[in-house]
Amino acid sequence: MKCPYCGYEDTKVLDSRVDSSGLTVRRRRECIKCKGRFTTYERYEVGPVFVVKRDGKREKFDRNKILNGIMKACEKTNVTLDEMEKLVDDVVNEIQKSGNLEVSTLKIGRLVMEKLKKLNGVAYVRFASVYKDFREVEQFLEVVEELKKEK
Image (cartoon, rainbow, N blue to C red; front, top):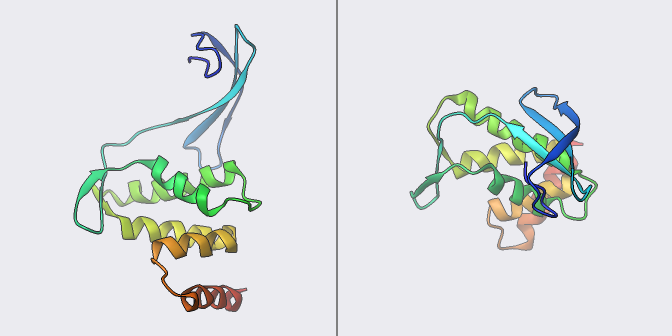
């Protein structure tokens, strides 16, 4: 594994942990040359899954797009990167379990919202505002009221 700090090719693994789903290994590494420390994640990859966009176009599934959306929704909240990674892993696992070679952005969005709702209300509202394309303040208020009723 190449060091992200100095580019040296040799690193050593300091710690390895399997996540609670058993599908991801988190490794803490240290560069032999510069002593920089960094984290890597190891996941298995199942055959190609394609995402069907709202306009009907298809593109290869990219878990990082889901993670980026979740990270934006979780900015300035107490949600940790590990919690975000687990949420993405859970969404990916559900998609893979379905056995379908295609999944709609609507399905992905629903899965993310379902999991964010349990994790953090603010992140849920932020994500919902983009996913549901809110145009009016009332739409935000409806989602907030829905959250308040469920608690």
